[in-house]
Length: 318
Picture 1 (cartoon, rainbow, N blue to C red):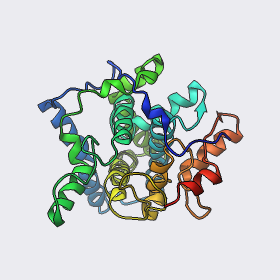
Picture 2: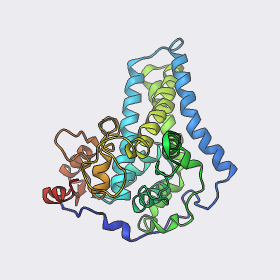
Picture 3: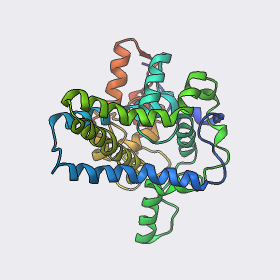
Picture 4: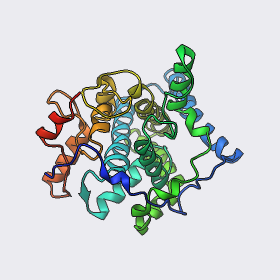
């Protein structure tokens, strides 16, 4: 596997946001705010409906399977696809695998591919500085400032105007026609991510109740869990945890989100070695996303997988 430098030189060259992706402007429209509110509130209402349905349709083993399988697939779409592959180019793969992860990541309901990548590249360029889209450290001092910062980094930033220069960050992806198409079809993938568990629930149980539970547990409740686990990487993992490596920001390693975020919670490690395909560098640091990348490599579906050398790791230790 290829070795990499401790800092990500890839962020020195900025690229261009697709016109086919969600528009990025210096204002956020009322329509966009409403869509965001629905995306945030609907999964919570799904949890309420799921709890209520326990006294009606009940809870079957199929519901748990759909919840866990859809969670794993869509989180991997974000962690392996949107993040390590498309944003940081931590490994290379063929177009079919790229499209698969792009669609799975879109079903996580965190925005179109090109917009997500542009925002995340900007985050790394200005991590925990005033131009960071979602740093928790610029909302005032004291406990109140910390709480405001936590809210802003978790989800409040999404309701703020997007930086006007986002179009400079994704020229590489914008040149790939099929990825532009996947990004522009984001609403379709959201719908598919809700319909698949509903259809599987109906097929496995053979009733409307099975379809309903599939839609609720594998759809809305799954989105709720995906949202708040991955959003916590931006908020919690920039406040609480350990900093074993020098990263020039406030990123932290947090074991809880290392596990439930499928490796993303080793966030200080990631910021110290941003182009590394592996975030859990210690043997005991669970990194399911890296295991998937390694499996792809064994199957000859991934290559040029980047991992820092032991010397690079030692030199960058805090």
